Amino acid sequence: MKAILFGLLIAMTLANFSGTDVEELTQDEFKLKVQDQKSFWVIVEYSQLNQEQRTQAALAAEALKGMINVGAVQSGESTTLRVYSNGQAIEYPGEWEAQEIVNFAFDKIRDFAFKRVGKVPKKQGEKTPEPQIDESDVIVLTDDNLDETILNSKDAWFVEFYAPWCGHCKKLAPEWAKLATSLKGEIKVAKIDASVEGSKAKSKYKVEGFPTIRFFGAGEKVDGDYESFDGARDYNTLLSYARETNRKLKPLFFEQLVNQQQFTDNCLKSTGLCILLFVPHIYDCDQECRDAYLNTYKETVKPLKSKPMIHFWSQAGDQYELEEQFGLSGAGYPSVLALSPKKQLFSKMRGSLTSTNVDRFLNNLLNGKEQVSRFSSVVPIEEIKN
Image (spheres, rainbow, N blue to C red):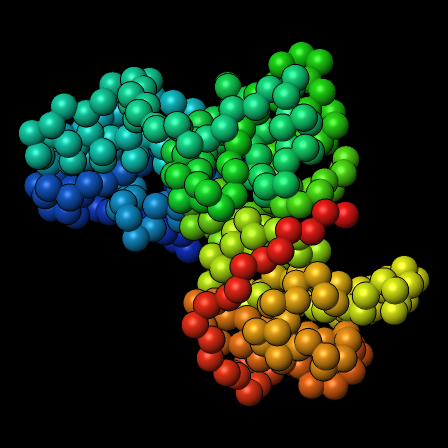
């Protein structure tokens, strides 16, 4: 007698879904809520449940909460699970595993939804045709030309190391193509198949999975000098990262002023500031003296390399007409001149060439706190042959 009571107690306990997200229904409630309605239900129909079936049904109900109704009703049949919509029932054929039950429920609710709008649902396993992607702006690199192309280039490069069979790479493809178009003329966007056997790119650039994305900054490059991208692979995140990293890694532009073309391309066409450092003539200040001035200036402006300004230096007298135009001739060297070609404004630094004075002058210019004057045009630049 005790054994019978114990068995009944276990059966009742296992059949009880209290404390779970499974709604227990009477036969009348089952007919009213499920069979006579258009709503979608996952129903456990049971005479007896074992513990594993109860657990997996409860887990599935928890996962589907707020999206799909999950209920249970006693029946005289063996335990089974069905999905209902419009009174129609489809029996679940799989294992009693929560994940599989959830997948089955979503597949069927999708089929029912398509039928309501008169569409034929896609057959299971049928693939959606991949959209056409315009990758014309994505540069295709190979093992043979990767190093030569990137390391010998002064441009910034954003490179995807991919595998043709990689699902994540296929998902990235339209985002990468869109990115390449947006960054055209600003940052070169490329891709390379690093899945081929013996790929030098894979080993050299430590590609351990696909896709792997590396950023190579503008300017002179050396082996191993790159940034790794580990963020979300959507267009907006990639675009923001590329521009911010390019700004961060932007090399300092500090060149000797030697001809008109150089000045036109980098200064007159610039929308930012053009800063010119004039150092004493080599006869008045030997190479060691000159290098000291140049190094002081260069180290001072390095932290400002991401700001909208480029830097030139010139020996006193080499650009005599330019110095005359802006009142530098005979004023003493070194001296610093700032030009804003777009606004046609200029300013001269007051004081000696020290880190403090240069830093203050440039920051004041950037913040609109420095005294400026207007000019209409710049005299031609003399060609200097070193």
